[in-house]
Picture: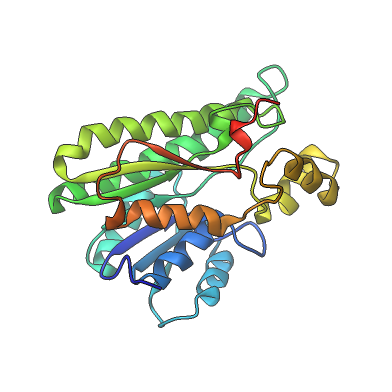
Length: 266
C-alpha cells in the first residue's frame, strides 16, 4: 500500500453489499481505508456495513459505518453533518448506490421507471447537493460517481430506466465537474462493465436466466474480450486513482472498467 489517501476523509455510499463478496461500494470503502483514508461508510443495510468493516484488516475506526437512506434529502443532510462531526471534513465523495430493473418502456411500469431514476440518479444528485458546499468552503475535493456500461451502449438486456439513469450520471458528473473546477473540486465517473459482484447471484440471475447463475456468468464472460469478469475491487481501484492526487489533472471524464466489452462491435 502507498497511502495514497493518507489524511483524507471519504464518504462512500452503497458501502454494504446485497450479498457476500465484493460489491463496488464495499470494495471502495476497504481499498480507501487501506490507502490511509478515514472512511464514512454509508448504506441502508447495517448488517452489510458491519461485514464491510469486518473485511478491513487494519486499524479500528478507519471505517465508520453509518446507516442512511440516500433517497431522502433530510437523511443525506444528516449523514453529511454526522461525517463532518465525527471525522472533521469531507475530502472525497464516492457514490455507489444503484441497481437495475428489467424491461423497456412498454414492459416497465411508471412506478419502476421513477424508482430507478430516484435510486440510481437522484441519490447521486442529493449527496453532491449536500457535500459540495463543504468542498467549496474547503477549496478542494474529489467526487467519483459510479455509472455503468449500460449508460453508454446496449449490454445484452433491456433495462431502459437503468440505462437512462446511468447515462444521466455521466452527464451530471461532467456538468458539476466543469462548474466546480475553478473552486478546486474534481468530479469523474467510473463506468463498470459486467462484473461478478454479489448482484449477479442475488438479483440479476433471477431477472435474466430464471435463477441459473452459471448460465448468466457464461453469457456475461462471452461478451468480454479479456475472457474473464472482474469484480468490485477493479471498480474500487479506479475510484481510488480518481480520488487521489495522482489524478489531480483529471476531471469531467470517465474511465471504463469492462475488460474491453464496450469496444466490441458484435
